[in-house]
Image (cartoon, rainbow, N blue to C red; front, top):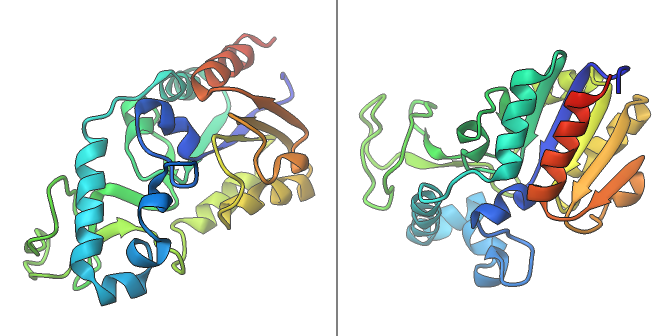
Length: 235
């Protein structure tokens, strides 16, 4: 891997699943318990804000009880020790990458631990409930905070930065993703068009596995640390 300097890593729910955070698409996952249309669209929030706020309040509370796993820690180690550039783009809305030691993380779908004020467009840190319509700590407006999570039909965050990172990458790695949610699912094809080497690390083949130069299947807590050691020990 001595020809690789710049790495872009895309992570999805499979990275955090082994920390006890429910995935959305697997059997028994969140979308079996709640319809997307009821909790993850702007229309749902307008129609039944209490249902949406309760759903995200529970998720926000739950992730604060979870701990980063070996995959998160391995990626934190890779960021610290890799001599080139490393950008982690995550679809996850937890903070386990950061708690695992990574700092250069782009949360393209937002995060549970900030809120978004529709009055001032601020994004204050937030760890408590929103159901009681607390005031925005930045502007003082009441009832204007919503989850800072990108819902279906909304534009993911920081797409220009993600595109710039892909354009300078030598290696694109997808870890723990379903390959079903766009635009992230299209990153591998963008990478291929740019001539970038591509690798998938996933529990099972994703919907886009056939686009990757190489695929490895198994638990993230096994695959990711092994791959990181391979990268760091390469001549």
